[in-house]
Length: 466
Image 1 (cartoon, rainbow, N blue to C red):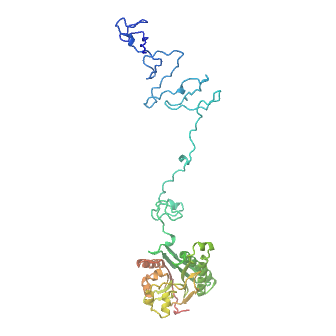
Image 2: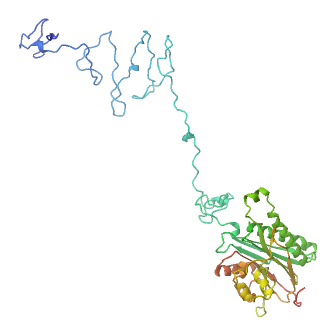
Image 3: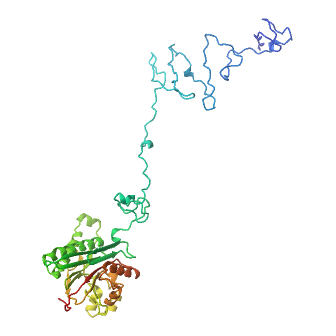
């Protein structure tokens, strides 16, 4: 059963605004049918615009006093709607809800600061507990990370700080691994090219053009005999590439032999005996490198003992002493190039044995692929150590050339070596050594190259072997 619409309880005619009396169904002025006016709903929500409803009457005292809406958040945007927490109220038990007054310094539109949690008499928590401003991070907080490294130092700064400056960029410091911390360029190793000048003698060693490292080493020094006469010493060692740690072997041998000579000559030991003893001392030093724990040998059973060759010379007043084991050589180059030069050593090699046995001539032997296989060396696995020594008394000034096969491969005969030695090598030994190393590099540099030059100012005596 349908219901009739109820009469609208209005005080004025909706059409002509004429006052109406209670119970009128039609307007007395214009005849408007008041029954078509919709009844007032029980709940009439109002959309708040600019803080008040249009035409709204003043609120009654028992109604809620709604605060006026904020016009803006201060940035040209409408302010957010009021939250329920901003209004006074009571909980289900009639107790006042906790106040949430915004702080005095709070900017419009920002979230009010939380207060400590409060509990009602019933023990029920009425608001959320205060949350920390920051939660602990699983990873380190980036804000607490160390500051980024400073910019690359200015040129020369690394050198001023005591570090080694990069040879490529001349700015960065070189780390322990031999790389520039600024540009990453690998630095040349110390033994790739070495030069030393000691008094009237000098030596130069270079890695060459084909090998990845320099396995040669040398030792040059000056000392004095008991009578005060000068004595010049040069030792040159060549690591055996097929052995383990050949660079360590040559370095240990050159140092041991040089120290032995510098200790024996001032005591009055004959130079030839001192050379013999120096070779034995070098052999002991190389043998010591093979003394490894059994566990190390088990991990690398294919490794063999370190090994090297040795050649040396001692120049005193009127006496030249040479000693060697292996295929490094000593040449005599007179200052007067019209007189013949000479090779003062014999190789411990397969080719030399073939020539000595009369099985091949020198050209045939050294053309064989086995020519440079050595038959004598310093090392724990050497068959039998046979130090070779010889002494000479040149009757004229000249230059003694002590070198590895990295040089004499490109100037094998004594005449070829003499042609490669500069004419002023006796007065400029370091320059002469550099020229000879350059000669080997120009020839191909297939091996490490090491050469030492010792000037010999001979007294007016007859030459010969002592």
